[in-house]
Length: 136
Image 1 (cartoon, rainbow, N blue to C red):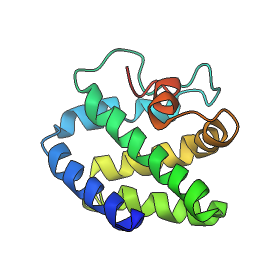
Image 2 (image 1 turned 30 degrees about the vertical axis):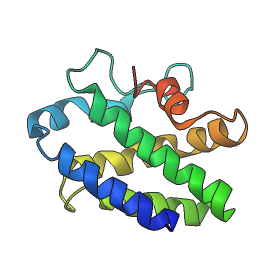
Image 3 (image 1 turned 45 degrees about the vertical axis):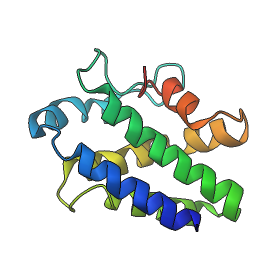
Image 4 (image 1 turned 180 degrees about the vertical axis):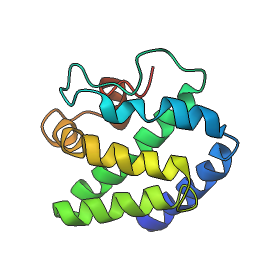
């Protein structure tokens, strides 16, 4: 099975699972991510533990896996990586969805760090997200 098709199926399946997330939680919790320091040691999505860690962790891992597949599988340029990750973010919901907006924000904020952790440190997707404090 083509990796792009596999990833698309995976993203759509989890987009359906993420749909019940409360708009209030997304509106109040996710914007904190953009205000955090870009410094690797200080970067984090939130200052307090959240009740719904799994969706945040999953979205981070989807982004990291997409970046990893583009680097390893396609030897992609930065523009190709950005395009691929943007497609994944867009597949998570409608254009006005907070999940989609947050996914794009995550990419804009952390893409270079994610690429470094994959190519320089050889981190696995979950480890990257732990380092970014998106996963427990």
